[in-house]
Length: 389
Image 1 (cartoon, one colour):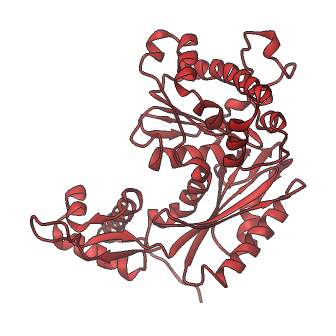
Image 2 (cartoon, rainbow, N blue to C red; image 1 turned 180 degrees about the horizontal axis):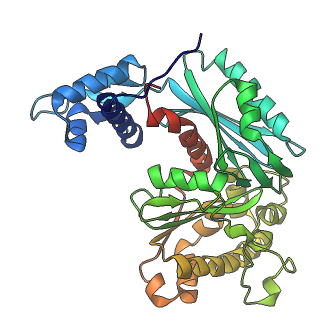
């Protein structure tokens, strides 16, 4: 028997949009009182109560008693996203697969880094994600409602269908990762470029929150990617490939700083070179930062060399895009954080004066969670668009 699904009536369409608006507010802003929802949306109190009641019945939000410290006015229940609603977020890299369960309340319930001594294939990635979900469902996520999977992939991802056109460091070419993971897990799956998803996370919840003009660069095991926010909106490009700063040819003022003839930015400003400087083969971000801080002059010289080249690349981006904030994530945050004022001065010295005057450089405040939170946002997108679908 064929089930015919009719388009929503105008009234139903308005209700869907209002439900989506409330759920997104609670998801993005955190716990919100009914009174605050009324003020933010312009809807009346009875409509808010009705909509919140439906979101509660859908198992998407929880209502809590009002804050007992509130003494003025009528007490208003507090609406929070239900942490039992989760997305599985994954970030495949050349040295590890990181998987997490991220709640609709943005809490990271579980996180695991599976280190590997070989390059992951798309099929192996799908299998490992499915195995971890099955294991978690029998344990820590027994009470969870898993709605989707999101992957942050270090490579070019076609926005239309999640096809990984090229992830050169993983050696993935035209890999149907979205379909492989969906088939292995039985869950809707979203795939995006890791830096693009990191940009989304930092713009919604992190160092770029509330900023309308942002350049974001992410440094990972596979190189350097980036993302752009212009007039408060993410810029993805015609095919979804915008922001590949790591593939630009860097300007290198001192020939002694060059390490890769005819190399691109990510050949010179490189996590692998930092690991080599501290004698490590592999490390997560906190471990690398600690090792660099404790290392000797050779590591300090390598950090300084990479900062000089990075400053020129950032100055070029500042001249072209005129952002108010540049956010650096991953190992780029590590090499910036030791002297962020000094890095800012280097960038301003190479930028047009008007473009650099008000420029701020910030490190990603979501730290090593930024890509996972971004992948979870991609996974939650359909739910946030229509909570009752």
